Image (tube, rainbow, N blue to C red; front, side):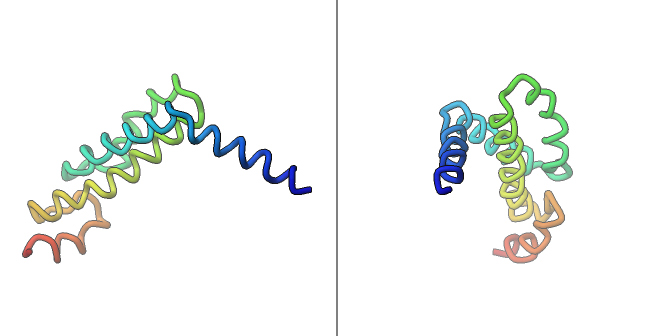
Length: 102
């Protein structure tokens, strides 16, 4: 009973811990961070633009790339909120109120 649970779980962790999967996640975070720093562009835009790239990737790597873009752009939207008082996403509005005066 325990083997039927832990064997697929170990296989899932092995596919996530693949070098190329982690590389695509890091690439997605960097691209998302850069796109999120530009006001008006967000994770929806970056995801829509890079979906054709995922057609040539393995499924786990493609999902890792898209998750990296989403999380990187959420963090990158704080850059424009703090430096220019213009939030890149609606979720960065509170960051603009507190970060810009500092």
